[in-house]
Length: 249
Image (cartoon, rainbow, N blue to C red; front, side, top):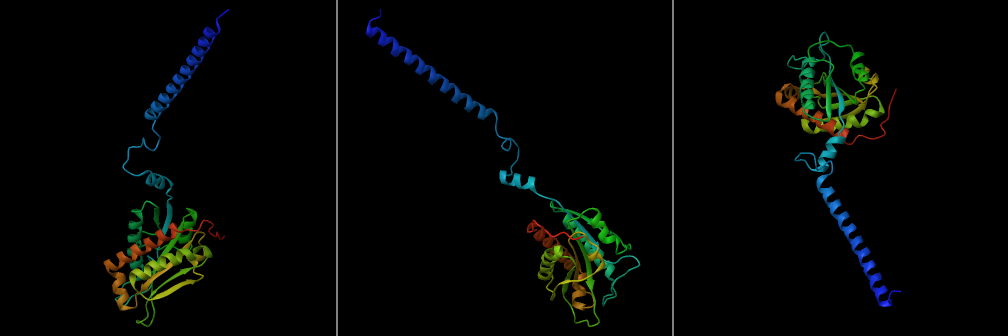
């Protein structure tokens, strides 16, 4: 039989061995976890880039919007005549091409043109282009006329309720940039708007029969400013676009 003192020493020794073994397991686990973290960085930190993580996430989630730009009139349909004899169809094409070029520079937009030269396109076919591709917006560009050359200003038309915010966003930017009288946004049963199944507006940038406004509308600087305003309006609209937009049939 072991002496009580000897038994107690062996018991303490056994406990010490178990304790040391547990400490060893803990140390090995800690070292393993640390090594694993060094060898396996997270996916975002492994991407070679100078952009912050927040920007990477934003870029990944960014949506692209299809925009159809419609240059009013064209071909056998010259549109209105300005005080200088310039026809509306040439103004609308020139401005539409500038809007298209600016939209191409924006990652959030995928622009299309109903016409890129002096061709006639039936009114039915213009909105149908946007409908067929399920575009996010249809913008028809025009210039106004009146018998009194003192009349001027910018006005924007829409037909369906889902186009009100689009009309207001683009209209406000154009009015502010061009400095013409604000003639407001209006609900009108225009064919290109009535047949559209996507948010659609018709923008009358200014009056070609107003000498001062015509000079601005036909000038390179004026068209550049108008194009930028239209694009800024589209950017504002899609940035604040309602999630539960009304869909019309």
